[in-house]
Length: 232
Image (cartoon, rainbow, N blue to C red; front, side):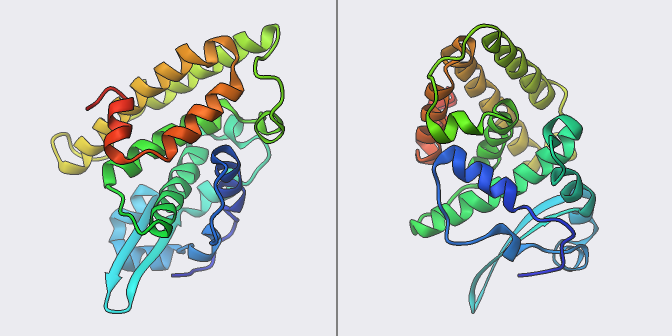
């Protein structure tokens, strides 16, 4: 699926690829849906949500398309976007996260559940925001522990991001619906896991250990992820 897009999401894919040491043979920009196509596929609900991953099976195979609205894409493309527009970066990161996990599992001839997609996206948003600007540490394997005030700043950032994601976040869907309950479960599981990350790594400034754990978690199966989050 394709469609005109005002801003690339490749930088979001690149950031997540670097974080997870993951290389896909496809670019998210080649699967972008514009508003017209998103409306045709998902109606007005897709437009209202501002971010939707479409996975459609037919006699020709499986087709994937990602819609992230123009405003969010433009905001996410600006320098320092996590600080400028947290919501836009969350939308962009969630969509790219869904796309990448579907593609990663497809390359392994494996399936992925909707709950796992939502859970991984919540973790990806947390990690991407907390580690924004730490690409050199991730790429070059710099000192395992940050020094001095860096630890306190990292810990404070982690707490702020957790609060924005898990305490202040609002559900679009009516309580009790299948989709709302899936989002709620994903949020609760991710909140538990990110607290673990904070205690084990971020409280000590252990960026290398954090990245190692995140990469290990990404490659776990669904049941193993649930157990790691304390949800099994």
